[in-house]
Image (tube, rainbow, N blue to C red; front, side):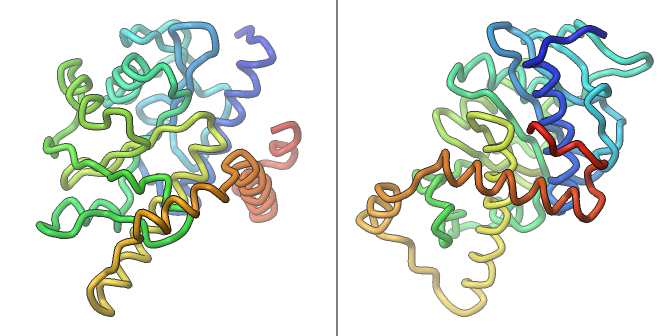
Length: 245
């Protein structure tokens, strides 16, 4: 399989991101990361059954935005919820990377009647405009379901799927990793807050002040390096994987 430099880097990023999200409990035996191949109507995504704990760059499939498989390792097929990724990338040209996962604590907020998932940690201001809940709890496997989910997400950075999981979108694979970690961290913090009493949402002024002082590009770069080093040290990533990412 011949790939240019950009695709090779994106393959390594997706594989590394998947392994790291698995190590942090955000991906389990299911869920997937995708990334748009720049300048094309194609994306990279893992196969249906490849372990998230052992994903390698060469395991990824190239798929077009209509779900057609362009390149794939032998005897592999895309994940059953591929339409989550294709529908969102079609609807959102500003999005480069998509994560579908099943975070334990965040998903519980889809079952609460009067308590939305609000930001209680500073980095969660990314979702201060709201995290909508998609009403369909089933597998998102048809084009119509994919379009409906993309509509629920709208112009946001994340949405929850009732009794199912979450979808997050970002401008890059490293940013998607950081968002995936922060999203569940914030849900866990809110859960603990509610055990102590009633949650007090951040005010509009507080949110505006935090947004004004926040440099996302620098934050993503710092945490990507941190998590790569952590994963290299504990064996989540094979020796040498982090170089050049």
